[in-house]
Image (cartoon, rainbow, N blue to C red):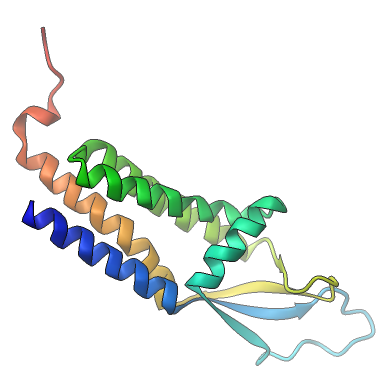
Length: 163
């Protein structure tokens, strides 16, 4: 019981840090560059985790492909809940799925620019992953790792039951 609270607390701490820290670095590029000077390379925007969480929901409503990574958030909470319920196999699967969906969906932003404003004047092009992004992925990864370790400690959980 003590290790569960320790791992859950550490994971929630990592998730909270990820929400507070910058996660993604975007270049702001004009959508129509005909007759305009090239965009300034110093025109960048570092988006914090809490902004990405809110804008990810909006991105899903407008069918933005990189917003698929937002689905890692409910999977993370499912992972935490099942971990505390001692359903370690399901918790490990949910944690691994959260990491894969979070990374894959966010990684797709390298190919799909996001709208930067409501007028369609500029777009956000993903440039770099920052510390908050890696902490965001580490939170469900830690729970998945703890669940897998706990599963390996329970010998009857790894083999199917025979009648």
